Image (cartoon, rainbow, N blue to C red):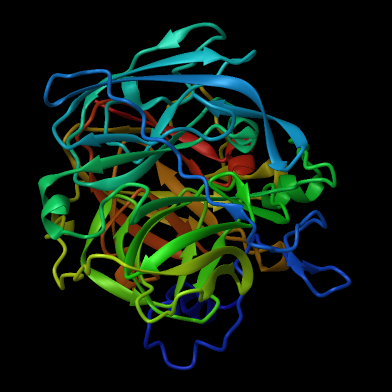
Length: 487
């Protein structure tokens, strides 16, 4: 795929892109196969036909153990469990404070946060706060190992704006397996700006999290983390899509506007999300918080680790109508519209004001090149080494990071999602061109296509050791990761 078509693939989701509605493009790293009935699955034959028969589970909010204003204390436990993805059939899983996935941690900007993380697994783990701007000691990278039976207690003050972040393990060579087994949860930040917008904000009622993942489920409803050659090359992808840990879920929605916070929590799959009736929706936030203006869209591309907040209007439907959320047109979740009407929410033209980082203030431009395939994946020709520091940065300085993808060999190469710890970026350009409107806000995970060059800018305000890596977890575990130190 040439650069022109790659750019179309990235931006054609924006409404008004002439002639793109009929294009059916498959993201790099996403293979399709068909069964005898023509049902499209992932790169294995384990997919379950969509039925829309399971009520969507909504993760609980984790209780704040502190009664003191602006202080938040939480307790989190990584534990071994069993989960039924198919009724009556169990599989071995991991979970935070439960059988699979975890609760939502919700805090406010300015809160002093303390989280006691107990490891009740039979192996080491870590907990990384993906997207949170904190110092290296509290970031939860591979240096912050928690041994079985031990507790880790990170403490930090939340300084960033309202956003939908998440947390997951980051143990060296084991991140993919532990996330796949179920260790992941959402981390919400609220602030006065988001409160005053009066967008749907009632958790579990009109503000719903959607953690989207794929699994290789066998006929007995089990999955195991076993990597074949294709999984090593492209990352582990399964034929059954889960939402909040449920197969084929449905959600009853009123006639009105709903807010959905989407996380691509998959190990490797890139999603191309659209509704079965091709209706429009508005993206109001990206990884690190609100966009300046809402972006009207019909399709949304999310790479592993990326998040998006969208507003969907169901007011045009009648009682009993249904609409499906699809990946490349294949249904995996159903919305069932009830006759109830809810409070009308007006989406403001201005959501927030984002102070642009002046590129002339950048003291350095660093280059990060994705290279290699399979077990040879690397960044800048090097694989992860815990005893080697790859980059040294000066605290409170601004830099431009230029991220390139040279994986253009086999089948045209594949996209790599770039993630850096402890920082939020602003994308300057893609191949010298302005990024799409829904990438104009804060980003911590950036999808980079084969042959593409992306420039992003950030000011590094927190000291410590941090990771940068591909967020295809099998690539990260294979060594497509490096370390930077801010001091």
